[in-house]
Image (cartoon, rainbow, N blue to C red):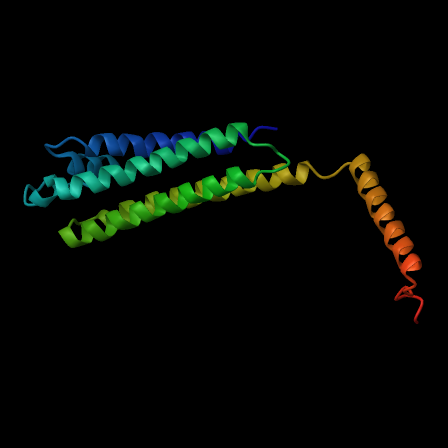
Length: 184
């Protein structure tokens, strides 16, 4: 069973962060426009530092890295094996943590610049990321629960355990050791 919700959410967040990175790269008012896309009205021209390359380049690169991580999570969600979802889970976790980190840095940078209303907008975005991550975890756990071992797998595991016990018992008898259960 493919992880449809996980792949859709990874693709959605990849598109959001790629769009924000693309908008940030506009040298004229890129960061202010990206903040406007998030929902922060930045009409004042007193934020001249937002157009500086020292601010624009790291922010655009950080947003692009998060977009690439979500693209990677999308590919992992499509190609992951339901019996071993660990690689897809770790990539998804790294992507969400990176997104939370970038949004937190945006809040810190916006507070340093004195941008009003940024905290509430980013809080909404963080809540959306958290809800997405919870939905991904729920889908992963339901998939793992649905893939519970069947009777054939249980029988094979019991057979392997019985062979191991017989082998250990044979080794104990050959070596002359007594079984620990016989001492009682």
